[in-house]
Amino acid sequence: MAADSTPRILPTEITPERVYERRREFLTGSLALALCAALPARAALPAWKKTTVGGGQTANSWREITSYNNFYEFGTDKEDPAKNAGSLRTRPWTVSVEGECLKPRVWDIDALTRAFPLEERIYRMRCVEGWSMVIPWLGFPLAELIRQAQPTGKARYVEFITLHDAKQMPGQRWPALDWPYVEGLRLDEATHPLTLMSVGLYGRELPNQNGAPIRLVVPWKYGFKSGKSIVKIRFVERQPISAWMAAAPREYGFYSNVNPDVDHPRWSQARERRIGEFFKRKTELFNGYSDQVARLYAGMDLKKYF
Image 1: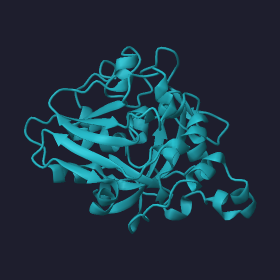
Image 2: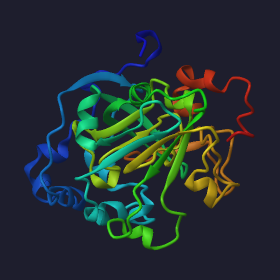
Image 3: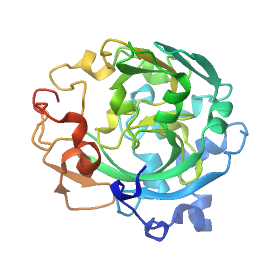
Image 4: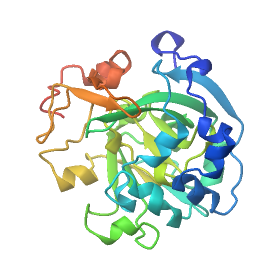
């Protein structure tokens, strides 16, 4: 990413991980931490580059990030994923890259993690319900994987398909959504330098409730646009129908860009509450990443293409 177009944040500005530094909190830690500890041992993450790419704000704590989540595959309440995600087994795991590309491939998750240099990206993340966090993701630009796959001239969109296994994901036993969860991006959105495939946070592997072992992160869009526990990436010619578009097309459009001027039919999007803070703050267009991404939507009616 060009140095003159990317906001910077110093590593010293990141909130310390007090949940790990205090023995008492470690011993009485959250259920989310206990669930992760109970999982089988995994290969350590490869060496990664600690960058300063981010939004210039203090990151939320590990506890906040891993205990308040949207992940309907494990329940619809924000606390459900941390309680229920221990049933997910992330090894063995493969990600199939297919569709309109010259080099389709089925990746083992550990081989995929080693194939592209990992780096830290500290991103603001905004949820459509009006809450937000700042998260230090660990991953690689999706553009790197796309370059390796070599999309054909027919490829205009990228479709992401997530795991469908009701035995591992108890929330899929009910039709809250049409499973599996499907998401999509335009190819130029997918190759934008900010779009990340995350395999960790705070320098550790992703906890199950945060989308392990690999998830999409698109910081200028609402959080539901970031598919979790991905098993398939497809290059397609036609615009994918995402899970939330299929469930409620009047409420959730394909683009899902953070836009304070487009209200959800049931609530305003003009303000947000950062987890850990009492007062609300004004919502920024494109979640504050306008300088980086506004050009992608030049000439578009952002109220029509919401």
